[in-house]
Every structure is written in structure tokens, then in C-alpha cells.
Image 1 (cartoon, one colour):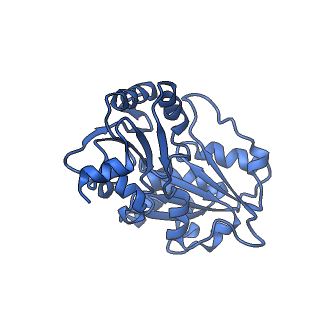
Image 2 (image 1 turned 60 degrees about the horizontal axis):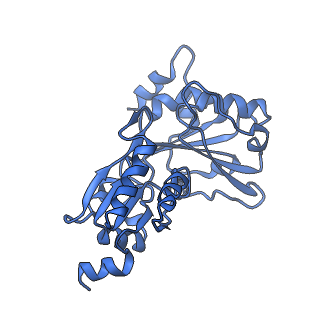
Length: 275
């Protein structure tokens, strides 16, 4: 099948696909996502899309970076919406490539609404979300019979200067695994609020940076130690935090004991010892 035939079959002119790029490893990209990328005439990319996946964008396709990272926004959401609308109304075959799954904390609803408002057809190709990738790397199940009856996905990102508006009582469920996206900067509040709502300070926590990528790092710790270790461990890298008793089974991670500061020693010093 020739490239133009592939394009006609998968993406019609003036149509937009929101495509999940997964956690970063190109081998975790779905077959459909890879085909859509190959068929696109213009690809709008997020900052969290891995380099191995960006390399799959064909030379004939225009690549437009619209990524947003904490404190560093190349484009605001309204501008991104407008760029998508303009490309679709120009009759181009458009792929909006989003890290993870477009339906999880990816602002898909805003883009869908903007496109549908001008009559553009928009479709979604799901992707593997970071929580699944982090759990797989650590060799654990997010749900565990007799331990974790359910899984909750939340984002700890809030507007600058505003407290997190979350139902802490519901989140502090000892029979649940809590997956926290964008939780690095909010770690002190997460720890404080969850313990205030009744979750024990000894609750296992797994911090994963760069899930699924060659440079992935994981740290096993406890809820009460989370504020002490997360900043020094994660730096400014993409970070996912898993909280709950099911996390106790995580393997291939630095242990909580190794990260606990000795008397008179800071967490930064501990991290430096392990560098």
C-alpha cells in the first residue's frame, strides 16, 4: 500500500486524530498509533513524547511542538486549539500526539470541543498510560486481591498558588492503589493531607521517573518520607507516584531504608552518596 493510500484509509483530509504516544518507549506504541503517525501530514507533539516515537514521524509530515512542562509552556491551550482547527480546516490530515493516553489528564476535552465547534471530525487512538508502565517495570499489579480492591488516578497539578482541591477522605483508602500524575511538586501536600485523612505514614510509595525509558529510575519509600526524598530523587524529570499497600511488592527499586537520612544528614546528602 502506498503512503497516500494509507492516508486515505486512516485519516481523511480535514480530520484530526488524538493519538496516545504511551509512556515513551516506542515498543509500547500501539500498531494503530504507528500507522496514524505514518499517515499524517502534520503532527502536533507534546513535550513528553519520547524521542524514539518522534523519530517515527515521516519526513513528509510537518512536526509542530506544542509541549507544556511545569513552568515552561511553549503554547497555551487556546493557541493549541486554534492551530489544530486551522490545520484541519485547511484540509490537512492531522495527528495530535499526546504522551500516555489522550483520555487521562491530557486536556483532550478542550481540543475535542474546539474542533467539533467548527465541524471538524476528531477521533481518539488510546495509549498506554504512565501508571501502567510504572507498575509493569516494577513487577507489580496495581490491583491485588485482598490488598487493593480498586485503583484511583489523580493529577496533583493545580493552578499556581492554589491548594489541591481533592477529596482526601476518598483518596486515603487503605484498600486502594493511588496513582498520582504530576505529583512531584505537590508531594508535601499529598503526604500531609493523606495522613491527616487517616492513611498511615508507613504506607508504601513508589516514585518512578521516566517510566519505560532507558533512564528510568524507581524509588521505594513511605508516605511520611515522600516530601523528604522526592525532590532530590526526581529533579525536574517526569515523575509518577504510586501509593498503597500493593506497592510493597515492587522490585528493582532503591529501598526506603537506603534513602532514609541518618541523624544529621540531609536527604540530598543521601542521594549524593548513591549517585
